[in-house]
Image (tube, helix red, strand yellow):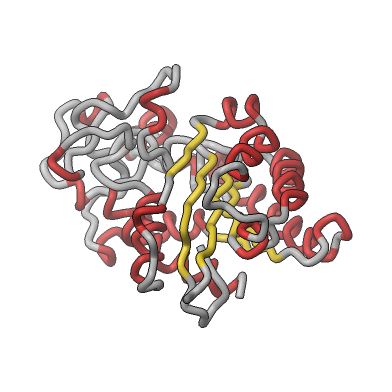
Length: 292
């Protein structure tokens, strides 16, 4: 019988699978520490300013029911689970869990060191699961925070880390509306800051692998910035007709659009389900290849 494996997603910012390449392994659990882009509904039980449990969120989800996901349907976390099912025939869906700590502030307040050990007490998790699984981390809250949280997971036994770069913040519909003028241009300075951060993050990850503190660990950088920017710059190539405005939930889109699949963004900051579908498969392949 094939050994079950754990995929741990650890994301520490507003932005945020892989097994050994060529091996037909299954993932028995998916852990996500992050916020709205990954949130599959845990936000419903938290005291937060923003909620996604009302219409028009969930418009394209099963039975058109809002679940707390910030989008018209499934989010990135769902897509990772779906793709792992495609790649691994024996994926155990009945054991697939989505644990999302809402917002970077809450994640920082709780501390991954306090959250992760709780998962280790789950009966299905064995000491080797973190060692053989994959930690998926977003660097959006700063490299210093990422380093300390990653080291916490490393001390627990994690050895594979996929770190996702910052998205093009200046091209979010909300920022286009505020700073883009009549033509709703992307904000150059915001994107420049994102690019600079991602460059430093990639260099840091190269350094991690040779540090004694992360001996035996593997790190791969996931280019989320380039993936979304490609859709923004060439929307028609991917079947989109609108990359500047959101489908709903803004002054410019009080009445929701009829077809969210034509939009890159669903609301002021969150991609549509189709966007997740387009970018997730190559990103997962990138992670699997880099962590092989």
